[in-house]
Figure 1: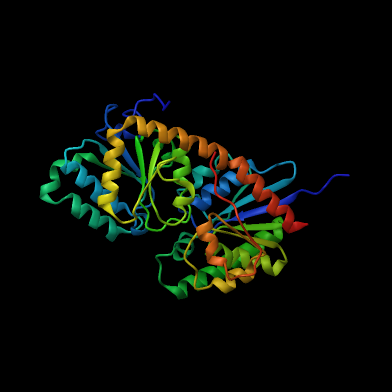
Figure 2: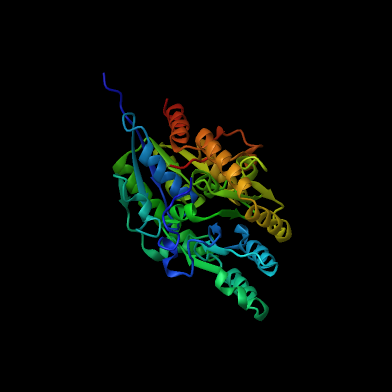
Length: 175
Length: 204
């Protein structure tokens, strides 16, 4: 009898190089291919694309530049952010329906609020990989969208001390 | 042993760096939370005392106003003679390769959830001086596999950089221990295994 592989999706909504992109590229590169399938969904071929050149399953969902730029932290136009996130939510929904992953592994707040929310609606399990010490203003919503939280250090883990959500610390690693 | 590839022929070919230059490096976004300005101030203190090294800053400017305050400081007339000692490369995709050519890596963050760059430096056998904030002390054990300094304290940082520049044996000892730490705790295969276990628990 052949066991079904677990299919993990790593969606992103940003293009700037950072720990989350590095980590996802390494996870998708080194994941045990006998037991797991994975796809990385990137909004555009930005500065971080070099990380994914040697990875097979990368889907560029061609998000218009103004949308992913509007979701950056420094943009304070919250109306535009809201509109952009609704658009990304539907793109996420469409891609998740097409690819049917078992798990969505999200690495940042905006990916959680868009792809994570879409996954939640479709009944797909969501892992929120948390890399920030500061709590988000939308903390409760983000926890509500998560089935499990992974934090990258004990310091980050303290952010969820008062939450009952299933959580674990996995320190980052490199090649 | 560190790599024997020429410093001058690698990423620094466009800059005034020779193989004999001592390099203190920074890799990360240029913004306040990364503490870049603290490092610049420390470097100026050391240049004023006559220490010779190049400060290589690799990373994109994420806050233009903050970067301008750095440039304003460097461009002050009394510091003009040190200008050639500062090298800003901007974003480069091969940052983890460049680390190999650093003699000291500084991670001066005011807020650092973890500090992946520290692990990359450990694997590159580049000795690290990090601030005592956030997740950094979870990786660096002071005086064992690296050096910690009081966050935002450019005086303390300058003392620690100076001490390591002058003591090659100490740099070698720390970098050997750091390499050992990296191999014991921070290989990607070890991390992936733990993440896979979480996946399986979730879909069970």
